[in-house]
Image (cartoon, rainbow, N blue to C red; front, side, top):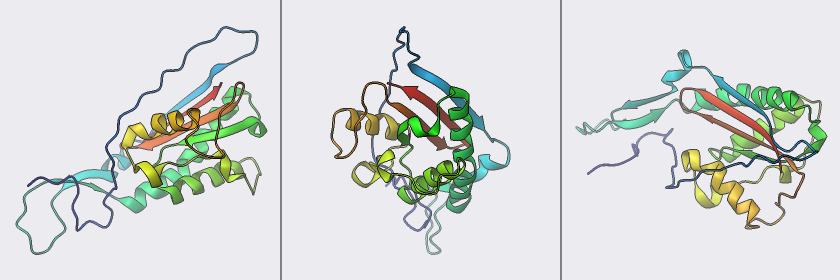
Length: 191
């Protein structure tokens, strides 16, 4: 029998099944719109080993299956220390003020981590308290569907599936993700 995760691994990830893609169109208008800036950051030397394959942690098993393993604490700390900086660098390149950001669409891996990343991002601008509605969350409903989390979250917000969350014409949004490798992507987009 094949399993996706080792049930004896406390750092096992909770994955859902999902697929998604987002296509952004370019608009030629007098006002600057669309993709305003992009940032891609990679730390692929020491951090590459944060996700590996390995045997079960069960002491009484002869299971030879390889399971996806992660150094959960290391990934959490990496994300908290690096994603806010990547978001800030990308927003600064866009020449948009932090006060103009209406929504942050962040990879739905861990709600506590995403909240802490967003809090650290705002603190980089000297903002201690931010409106939690800037960051819609779907992990409680859809789980961590890996790279599909942002496209499915955006689709849900655009189709008004979440109360208190909407994106309107002219809104500035930030998209941010972190994943295996370790890799971070950030994008500032104006609808």
